[in-house]
Image (cartoon, rainbow, N blue to C red; front, side, top):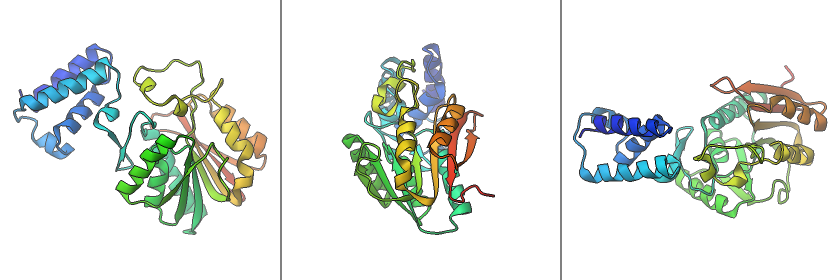
Length: 283
C-alpha cells in the first residue's frame, strides 16, 4: 500500500462515520514523520506495517473515540508556530490567528512602534500571547489563566518557542495589578445549554462555556477593564458569530465613548470585535 492509497482509504472511512477527511489526512501526514513537502513527494512510496498500525490506532482514536487529532499528536500549528496542546487547553483555531493578525495591524497603525503593555486574558495554551510577543518585540506581554494546568502548557510552549511572556495565575483580573495599552481575549463563549460536536467535548469545558447566554465572561471583562487600561487603549475580542450585536451593545454600556470595529473571519462569519479608546480608531 502506498501513502496515497492510505490517505484515500482512511478519508473514505472517516467520511462514512461523519468525520472530517481533512483532519484525517493531516493526522496521517503528522504520524508519518514527514514534512508536508516530503509527504507529497513520497505519495507513491510503499508504507511500512508499523506506520499502518500507527495510523489505524490514530483513526480509531479520532473517528470512534472522538479525540481531536491535535490531542493525538500532541500539538497544533498556530501562526506558523508549533504549540503543544492537551485536553487541558483549547486547540488554537484559524479565526484566532486572524485576531492576532488584526491586533498586530492595529498596533502598527495606532501605536507607532511604541513599547506597549499587553494582557492576554484566559491564555490557555499561550498561543495568542506568545505569538504577539514573537511577532512584535515592542509588545511587553503578560497572560493570565485561572487554570494552573493550562499555564503549565503555556509555559512549556514559551520555553519551546523562546518568547518573553509573563504568565499569571488569575481569575480574570483578580491578580492583575497594572494598566495596559492592549487587552486581548478569546473567552469561553458557548452558552451553557448549547450542544456541541463530540470532538469539542474533549476540550476543557472551562474554556468553552460562557454562562447562560455565552456573554458572561465578556461582561466581567468589560465591567472591570477600565481600571486596567491606559487612556489610549485597545480591547480585542474573539466571539461567537451570533453575538456581534449583543457584544457591541455590552461594550457601549461600559464604554460609551468607545469606537467599535467588528470584522468577519475568512468564512464570512462575525468573529472579531475591537474596542478603540483614547484616539484608537479616531480617523
